[in-house]
Length: 393
Image 1 (tube, rainbow, N blue to C red):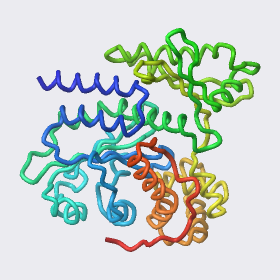
Image 2 (image 1 turned 180 degrees about the vertical axis):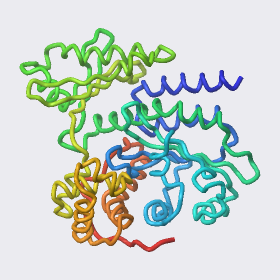
Image 3 (image 1 turned 135 degrees about the vertical axis):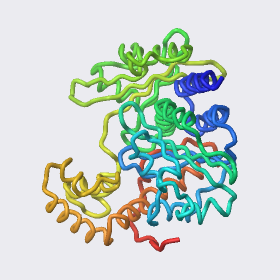
Image 4 (image 1 turned 30 degrees about the horizontal axis):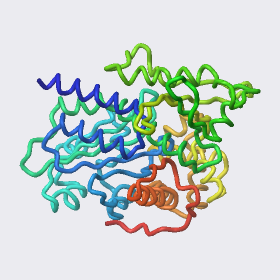
């Protein structure tokens, strides 16, 4: 019975991920599936992450509660276990409080400050690790005091669901950005009718298709790769699962004659009550936090690279290996970064970047959810790098 329940959950999440839903709608529907397979969970928190910096960009709570500032302070400024980055960097991308605390949850700040006063005892965080290796978000589940902890089969299920959860979040964010652009290089959207004629063609889509196929005009049929991903998405939605040996049939990478790369994502959207195949065209671009680091703190290119790796939790030795420089050189770069950002430690650096560039995004997404606007990913574009309070809990 358990195997059947888990298999149905995987199939259903694959169907939801193939749809053209915004991120919050995906979370809402995915939560019903998840709680059907992992019962006795009174509290669930969903998070979106910037896959390039691994910092929080927003979340979803079915009761519409805002993420307390104290929780964000704990996440980025307090020395404790069970942080989201701990789960991301764990072998399987799934981490329980029991594992993180070495079997002694009561010794943690998380337990004393948040769980115990709420009558909670167990928690597990599962990250949404895509097959590409990028992590797009996480979900944290809690159980009450006296309830059994999360079992091995439940943890296996959460790990197995990660790719579909990642796909659903990624596409939800793309849908939001394509329908309500925020950046000059935002994705474009093409929606087709039953005869494969575009009924929606955003200006960004026109721009990117022209780069992929120079000379193309809107009165002509879109290029074959664009049609193919949309057609594959319509077919994938009716299947139980896409065979893993074929990979993700609804995503393609195309190189434009100019040399630039584009990702094409096929989704199925509901337009005027009808299911329509659609394609999202996304130009490849570097992590958005990189130019913000340069603009806000005047970091050099190498200092930006070092800072980006620090945000992802890399050690000094790991940074040296990745950048092929000496440990001493990494330490020198870190000293210069600390001076420019006016911090004294790695934790302070991460906290400064988060509260200057990502907490505004978290709050913006909370406002957007309240008015049914699309969820956003990445750092907030106009956030100023101003000093923020760094006191502990």
